[in-house]
Image 1: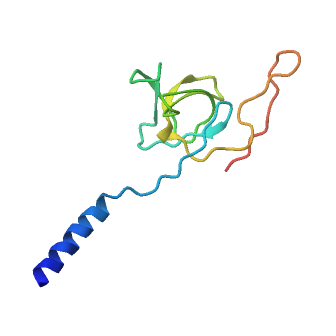
Image 2 (image 1 turned 90 degrees about the horizontal axis):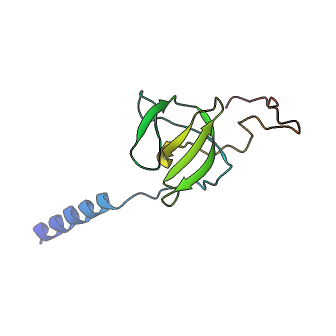
Image 3 (image 1 turned 135 degrees about the horizontal axis):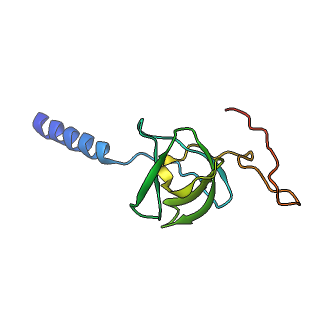
Length: 119
């Protein structure tokens, strides 16, 4: 009987460990401002298209705007404040920002400055 209970507890523990933890999905939409979060010291991989096509890397903490999405929002087309554009995987996005990050164009087509607050 003790062997049966011990076996049951081991099996239960095994399956409990396999159960995925809930993932809190970010509601990412075109036009939203985001902050990028690197997983390593190398930075965030930037791709030419929404597939493996590495063209460079972006520094951790970079602010950007989502300009497009692909593959059920797994890939995000972004534009950084310094003008870099490309595709990243949504795993590199920290919480979405509600304040403007990129300069907006005024009536004359020139860029106006927006004061950025540090988090």
